[in-house]
Image 1 (cartoon, rainbow, N blue to C red):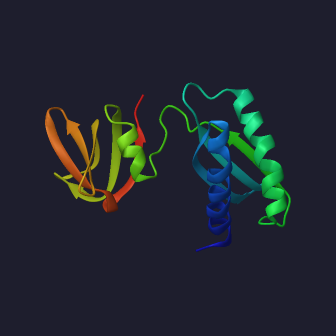
Image 2: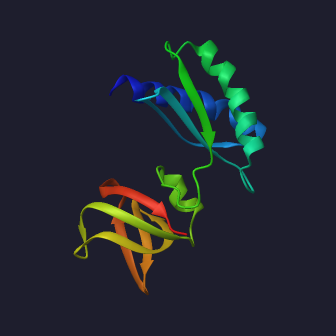
Length: 152
């Protein structure tokens, strides 16, 4: 595991401990080197709509906690935002949370001769993600999903 991914995972754990008390859920954390320098992105959600004020509040909450954790030893930019309407699903619990929503899944190997499947998310069943593809129920093993996004 590279250094940036390890830091992102540790920041995810820190944020997941502190943000729920303020009514926020951590969706994902990315930490990477970019042309402008090191960037730490924290994606959050809550009941209702994420506002600019929410992002500012979370940035203020996390900034001090991250700095005192001494996990990042270089200057960095902290960005806090919503994952958006076409958010990527990264954890199994999200496949339960978004039941009934339309989804696009890209797999590592074909399912029914397709690597891109679209349909209505029906949930999880014994480790498979289940979608309704125009009236046909399709089970996709979770471990072969390369990428999954909600559709808008």
